[in-house]
Length: 384
Image 1 (cartoon, rainbow, N blue to C red):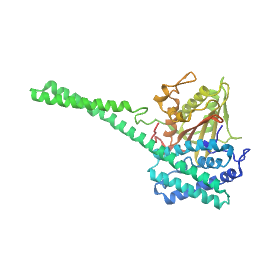
Image 2 (cartoon, helix red, strand yellow; image 1 turned 180 degrees about the vertical axis):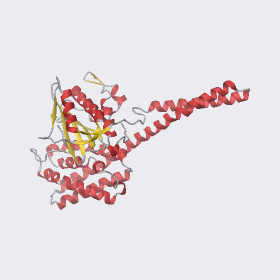
Image 3 (spheres, rainbow, N blue to C red; image 1 turned 120 degrees about the vertical axis):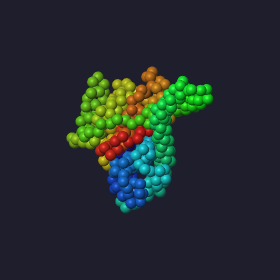
Image 4 (cartoon, rainbow, N blue to C red; image 1 turned 180 degrees about the horizontal axis):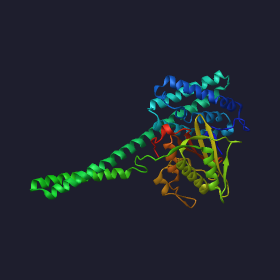
């Protein structure tokens, strides 16, 4: 199971290059130094909560470190694309950033990273330095593309909302025009009423067509009931409830302490159940599905992993789009259902993200990554 997406990679794992271990050892000081720099230099970052400012940066830093271990390089390149895209998507949904601010913060991240590594006497070869710098430059592109795509989706949802709101006054106008036509005292007034009626009907037809083009959600928000509970207790419940006759393994730290926070228990339960059901459905027959829980920098990560045939890279985004998935078949299973777009909407409504990493070697991992306290972000806009 890939731990890159959760920022919980074990630097002491066998085969890790010394440079990878050295960079990972500096993770916290780099992230904290970068946050301080952001708050000092970027005005739009100042008001952001630590969980939102930090975003996927801890996981990104660990994955950059894995680029320096040859056996981990291919997986790290794939996961960096996912992490960078989710970084850009969260910035579009949850911050007052524009695309210039997004690029600026990643430029600052690169500067702070190398400055802190120098401060910690981490000696990188010129080739290693170039590898990390190039990867961050590529991340800027992927984040900017995701930022633009999510902003476009949010604009589309805004148009859908406005279009929907137009229907009520338009219906009233149509009704009034019909009454005037029927009650008109002379032909001139009747003709004017018919002109109004035809024009209103055309507008009604155009707004209907526009609404038909807006898929999945039409700008609506997911209703959440935020309350304090223990996430460890929830993942145990989900694993136990789904384990009857099936193979669901729960991975927790030894003597895992409670992990209290503020979330919507029911929606997260349903999201996890949907991810596990998909993993059981599409994973290798008889192989276990793993549910893991990690936490860092005031965020919590819920990872669902299965072995088996990977999701093709070109489908890693379309699987979250309801109408594209509903029509496709895979290995005799009809579509992907509505579970994945629902799970993404839950994650995003909590101020977080849903990410996926899928390779032949590592299998498929979906990660729900949300703040520990979602109260400030309750009802955050979602592009799902």
